[in-house]
Image (cartoon, rainbow, N blue to C red; front, top):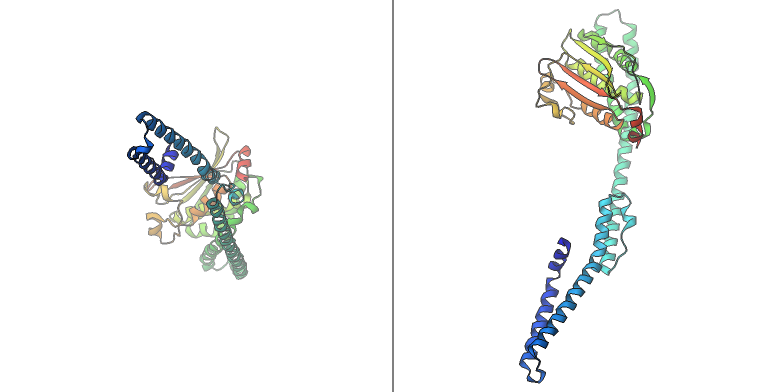
Length: 342
């Protein structure tokens, strides 16, 4: 009904023309004595013409709005190939609309193709740059390993590790757009993923004299080991960064009654204010804690969350100012991976 009233509003000029013509005809009949007609007959004729006009108006409404209704239906389906399913034109204006929409679709696809090509080139360049940088980093690591008897080497190794982690994160960022093509599910134990990352982060922990309490409960999950380790690395890096010297990071695993496996990483850092918690996964958000440490980029948790959403892992954070922060990684059930892969 609303659409019909809107159509009537659009056709008001035609309705006014018909009404004016009808009134003009009635006046002529009344003034011309040669066309004498009884009032009842004149009313009957007017009623008949109005009824015919209403029927005509309803018919034209259905015919003239069929194309637009079909177009709205196609748009509501959000089909990426909508330009191939445009409704058949009823009038010339509908054909012009089809041609106009087709041209817009072609232009948009061309622009999207150019953007994808540019992103691919940039991603390849970044990956090549990272691999080039890794060569001197490897040489530096060999030098550090060969001179561990010198006390300053512990500090140098910790700084080397930070550079290595930043470059490695950049490599993963360049691969994120194509994560779906690099996604392999395997059955693996959570503790093995964690210990592999802790082994790489040991120099940083030693430099800050941070202790690690690891619950080595063997719980297996089905996940992509490489990308899952990337998430764990970001969480551990944050925990180490904000933990005080001599603090402890606690890592536990457990299984919920629902069957979901959960990895918990807790630190003894300054904690996160309640008003900052809803935004910790936002890109570039550092919060009060990050500003105090002057080392936060606002990317670690953001990247962890982006990857987690793509591989079906749920990240949640609990924190209290002065009492540290705990991050929970909840892994999906095996029967939930069909949806994750789509």
